[in-house]
Each structure stands twice: as structure tokens, then as C-alpha cells.
Image 1 (cartoon, one colour):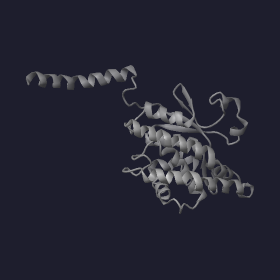
Image 2: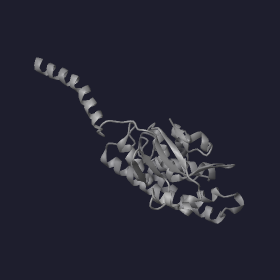
Image 3: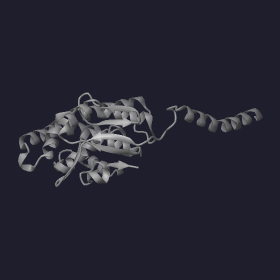
Image 4: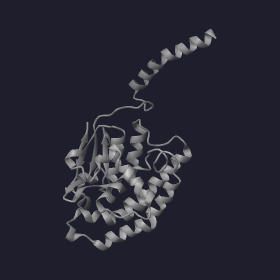
Length: 259
């Protein structure tokens, strides 16, 4: 009994020393803070709301959820089509987002978000259970490919133009894909979500791209009567503090950095 007690005391005394050694060695085993991260994105104020890149909004939400210091570098919307050399030097496809964290330059919103999850924390945005982690990645991939790169741009991109110049037929096509394919699937996912109130239980990386969907549909005001669980879920996402940074009601100047 005496030996066990002395051993426990010794371990308690050793813990701060180990923590200090790991911190000084730069080990990723401990949560760390960072210098100001730079997020390259496209944001623009319009009379009908502030519009933002959906994929960059994913990363902005993660930065906010993790309370990381960052600032945005707001690119001109035309650069996404012109793809100037300085942009291609950081993203080979000339897209946003890309991110600078010290000397690291990272592109692709999903890759960036997983990097931030693994590099920084808490809070943790990936569950520890392998089966649930799989579901998180599965849903994140579906929303990213089916919605943010599929149905949503048909609705979202016309809002970057004056009302008279918008393609109403394309916008309605996007809504119809949401109504008939994307939102019914999400309704079924939410029906099985269980405790926690989010897509895979507790708030996770699965919910992050759906924050961007909440942003788009706040501007578009598409009716969601056929998918009541989705409607309630998107309203819940808009109540999170991190949503303010991507809300159409938040001007660019009001959410361009976090100290």
C-alpha cells in the first residue's frame, strides 16, 4: 500500500514535467494555440444579404468553433474565373478556400477542416467511436459533393448578380434537386441521429457543411414543409454562435477576423 501511494505521488509530480517537455518539443499530442491563421475566401455585401463562398464558410465555422485566431483575405469574385498566377500558386485549381497557418499552405475545405481538427483543439469535432467517425465523414462527403458542389451552386451563384440577371430556371432546378434528392436523405439521417440534436449526435464536422446550407437557404427562403426535421435542424444551426461569422445578416467588415 505504501509503495502504491508513493508511486501515485511520483506520477502526479512527474505529469507537469512531461507536459512541459512535450510542449517545448512541439509535439502535437497537446492542444496548442497558433499565430493568426489566414483564410482566403470570397465575401461580398449585397442589399439582399452578405454572400460568402460555401466551402470557405465551412472552414470559417471550424475556426470559430475552435476559437482560433484568424483573419480573412477577401479575394475579388472575378478571381475565381480569371485565376491569377498568385492564386494558382496557392491552389492549383484556383479555388477557395485555401489557408495559411504559419509556413503551411493548405487547400480544399475538407482537408483544411480535418487538419484544424487534428492540429488544434478542443473542442473536438470528430467523435472517438470509429463507427460514428465513419458516419461523420460519410455525411460530410455527401453534403460536400451532392449539395455544395451540386444542387446548391445552381441556387447560390445567381444571387451574386442583380435580380434581373439571375437564371430563374437554374435556381428552380437546384431547389428541385434539394427537394427530391438531398433534403429527403438528410431528413432520414436526422430521424436516426439520436441524442445530441445534430446530424451524428453531438455537433461535429458532419454539421459544418450544413451550416453553409443554412446560410444559403436563409437568403433563398426556400420552403421546407416536406422536411420538418431538416427545417428545425437548420434553425438550430443558425442559433450557434459560430453561425454569426457566415450569416447573411453579418457584414464582411463585422466578421473579417477573430483575435
